[in-house]
Length: 185
Picture: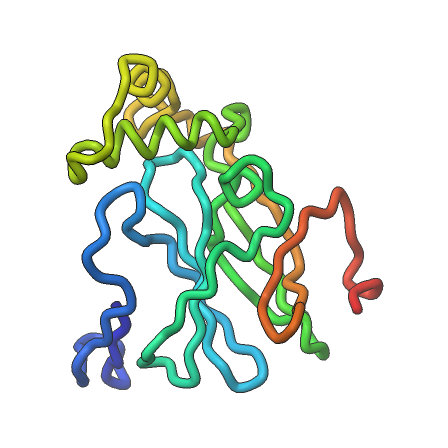
């Protein structure tokens, strides 16, 4: 949901725009990170699975108030199904350039998400809302033994910093073991 606020940021002054509707966990969106590029507005969001990372989703609009078009997961080559095991928290423009960097939280860095674990989460969490999803005992165990809200030690959290690239006009985030701002193209 997007709202315009008054100048004191204390009240909504206009109707809000709903970007995602009808979604349930783990597919409902949170962790919204906004940035602009080329006069367009981009939203990078996360699914809802506690401190355990999941796939991101990018949406774009010509206006801050939408309507937004969902572009899908911008994390190219991410075999973890978990945004390189992170959740976007901030986007910023590198000073004096057109480059955008995403800072992403790794709430539980020692818990590495895999495609198989994520699929178990989808069934375990989603089956509460969608009766066509069937969670096995193994799926429930995978979820219950993960670092959830009550058991996650977030004092160990760290960050992933990755630049946004543009491919055919769409934002793309690729894993880089290291990078330097002056080497971005």
